[in-house]
Length: 411
Ligand code: ADP
Image (cartoon, rainbow, N blue to C red; front, side, top):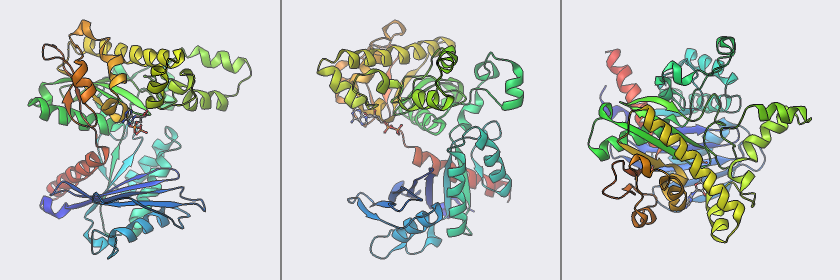
């Protein structure tokens, strides 16, 4: 089978109450259409749809489950008025975002019954995400009965981490019995920008040491040496590491027992650390959004200014550590909503990195938003580069790769 066989690839990101879809034409490298069904399973489900780069349309639909949501999305894709394909048979393959692959999946994989069972086994580690991701797979199997499905895991790229980086210094039996270890997340994005950075720097990934910073509502950093992850900042869950929109990142674990002994329940602590911490917890305006934080700091709010410094301090701390552990670095990459767009947030980080040869060029930093560009001075030993991520495109590419390899191996 030639690559042409997999020309149109549908990418599905199925959440507990949402279903995002993007239809790619792989050979022309274009997005044909994309959209989102929100509030799946409620009477207020809503379909947002956008063809090529035309304006978005939005309307209420009946979508009591993911199957119905997908069927409605597909109706738009193949409709003579709104569609971009004549028949659903034109969709050659489907790529699914799956959050947790634990140690079972270190690469993207063609979905079989065994793979679905494996994804279910990993649900223990991502109880909100993996079952919802599987709902998307099952919906596709019904609507597209003869089309191959591929799972692309957020954790897979980080499976290349060495044992000394992923183990926690807690009793071994917790790892043996409960699989407690660092897994890392945003792997699809870290891999996408690694490949894009290699192209930009005109060097193969095998020869590069990169520090990739995915900074969005959720944020993580990865140290990538020769195409393999040496370490990453998220842990067994996406709560660890950097200061995020509403998540605390690293804290002293004893704070949790202290709060529990004050009578606060596990659920309340979980909620506070995941949904009311990070920028939201500290910036004095109760918003987890970086733009709001920067605006408040600009207006002189001391708490917001301190929040930006905490964010910069923690992020620079990780970058410095990874720089040392890799024996230097070729580039620092910024991506994600904040990394791509927020010059003030990047300034908070890069201004702390002069000791490792990374000096901000203020004008370049301010001029760079949503596009690839170097934001450090020409004399910097270590450049910082903004590279927009595209997780959907990465899933489409992974789907194509897995299917091409599967076809080759069965020839
Ligand atoms: P998610 O992790 O949910 O995918 P995003 O990657 O979209 O989140 O990042 C959201 C963050 O990016 C928010 O804090 C938001 O303020 C910030 N952001 C998005 N666009 C801009 C912009 N144009 N300027 C500054 N910050 C931005």
